[in-house]
Length: 252
Image (cartoon, rainbow, N blue to C red; front, side, top):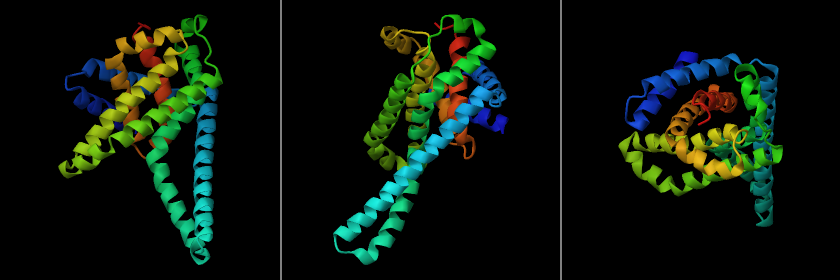
C-alpha cells in the first residue's frame, strides 16, 4: 500500500506542475515512508484516535440533527405520516454530505491536534528544532482548522459550476478538483508546521516564498485523502509529511 500511495502522489504532482519533479517526488517518498513508520508512536497514535473519534462524533451529530430537523418540518406542515420517511431521507443526504465534506472536516479536526504530531516528528527526527519551536495553542489550532474548512467549502462551492461544466470532458472535473484542493491543502499543511517556527507577522512572507513546495505537498496530501481506507489516517500522515518537508527545505 505504501508504494501505491507514494506513486499516486508523485504522479499527480508531476502532472499538475507540468514539469519534471523527480528529485522532489523522491524526497516526498522518503517523507511518506518516515511518516508511515511513526504512526505507531504513542503521541501520533493518540492524535489519530482523538481525531477519528471527534470526526465521527461531528458527523453523527450532523446526521442526528438533520434527521430531527426533517421530521420536525414534516410534522409542522401536517405531514406526520411522512415524518419517518423524511427522517430516513435526511440520514441518506447526511451520509452523502459527510462523504463530500470529509476532507474539510478531517483537516479542520487535525488542525486542533496538529501541534502534537509536529512536535512528535520533530522530537524524533529534528530535536534541534525543538529549542526554538513555540507550542501552538489549541485555540489557534482550532481557528486555523476552522479557517481551512471554511476556505475549502467556500472555494469548492464557488467552483461547483466549473466542476459541472467540465463533466462532459470525462476527466476535467476530477483534474480541476484535485489541483484546487491540493492548492488549498498545501497552505493548511504548511501553516501547521510554520506556526511553530514563525511569528504571525512573518507567515505571509513565508507562504509567498514556499508556493511551489506547498503546492506539491498539498497534492500529495490530497492524493492520500482520495484513497479509501488510507483517507482515515491521511490527515495525520499529511501533518507528519509536512513536518519533514518543512525541515528538509531548511526552514527557509
